[in-house]
Amino acid sequence: MRRALADTGWDGSRRALVAVYAPAALFSTSQGAVLPVLPLTARAVGAPVAVAALVVALLGIGQVAGALPAGALTARAGERRAMLVAAAVSAAALAGAALAGSVAVLALCVLALGLAAGVWGLARQSYLTAAAPVRLRARALSTLGGVGRIGLFAGPFAGAAGTALLGRAGAYAVAGLVVLAAAVVVLVLPDPAAPAPAAGAAAPARAGALAVLREHARLLSTLGAAALAVQAVRQSRQTVLPLWCEQIGLDATGASLVVGLSGAVDTALFYPAGAVMDRFGRRVAAVPSMLVLGGAHALLPLAHTGTGVALVGALMGLGNGMGAGLVMTLGADAAPPGQRARFLGAWRMVTDTGVAAGPVLVGALAGAATLAVAGGGVAVLALAAAAGLAAWVPRGGGGGGARAPPTPHPAVRGVNRALSGPL
Image (cartoon, rainbow, N blue to C red; front, side, top):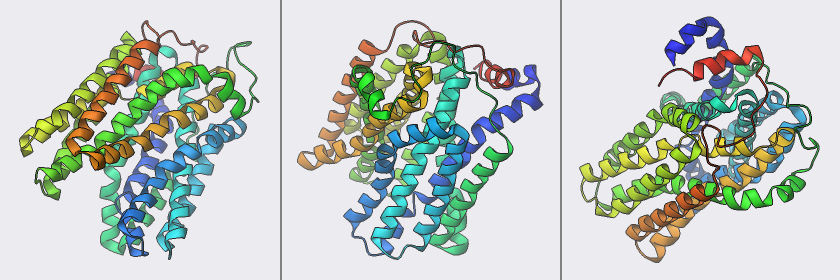
C-alpha cells in the first residue's frame, strides 16, 4: 500500500486518504474514549447494575433506531452535511452525559450518541460506495472498518488520560474534543468528488424509506438476514470470550490480555480481507470467515487454561478479521445508485439488529443452560450464517456481480490507486 502511494505521488494521495479516513478514525476514537466510563457514570447517578447495562445498550439501540432516518437525512442533505450534523449531536450528547444528574438524562444522551454514530457511519459508507469502483470497493470499506477498529482501540487510552486529569468528566471532555476535531477535518478537507450515477441507472431518488424497504424486501430477508446473523456472531464473541475468561478463573488483567490479543489479530487483517474480496469475490472470504469464527466458539468450552483460551481468542480474531468490511461491502454491492443512502439505511437497520441480538443470545442461552451451551449456540448460528452467505452472495470475482459505477472523478483516483497497492 505504501509503495502504491509513492507511485501515485505521496502528497496528493495522502490528502485524499486523510480526507476520507481520518474523520472516521477520530469519530471512533471519541466513541472508544467513553465506552469504559458509560457504565460507571450510570452507576454514579444511581442506576442498578442491570439498568447500567441497559444504558450502555442504548448505544446500539440508537444505531438501529436511527438507521432509516440516517438514510433519509444523508439522501436529502448529502454525506458531508450529515456527518457534520452527527458530529454536532455527538458533541452535545457527550456534554450532556458528563453533566447528567439522573439516569433518564444520561440514557437520553447515550441514545443520542447511538443515533449520531448511525448517521456518521451511514454517511461515510454511502460516500465510499459511490466513490470506489467495484474492483476496489471491499478494500475501501474494509479499510473504513479497520480505521474504526483502531480508533475504538486507541479511544480508551485517550479517555484514561482525561480521567487522570479530571476524573470521569475528563473522558467526556477528550471524546468531545476528538469528535470536534473530526468535524474540523470534514470542513477543512472535503471528500474528493464522487462520480454521479450513470444516466438511467437510478431508481427515483425521492422514494421514501418504507418504499425502499418494500421494494427490496426479498433481498433484505435473504442476504440481509444472513448478514444479520454474521453481525450477531461477531458481537457474541465480544461477550462470550471475556465471560469464559472469568469462568476459568482469569483475573481482569488476564482477560484483558486475551481480548486484546483477539482484537489485535482481527485488526491486522482488515486490508488483506478487503483485497481477497476484491480479487476473488465476496463469498471466498465470507463463508470461511463464519466457519472459522463458528469453529472457535465451538472450541471455547474445551479451553481451560490461560494459554488455551488465548489461542481460541486468537482464532476468533482470525475468523472475524477474515471478513472485515464484509457486511458494508455486501450492502454497497446491492445498493441502487439512485437510492443509495436510503437503501443503506434499510440495510443497516436489518444488519445492526444482529449487533444488538448477539449478546442477548449469549445471555439467554447461558441463563437457560450454561456458558458452554451459549458458545455452541453461537457456533450453530455461525454455520447458518455461512450457509446463507453461500446461498445468497453472488458468485464471481470482486464485486460478486454487483453493478459497476461509472469512471471515478480524477480526485478519487489517488485514493483508488493507494488502495490497489500490494498486500
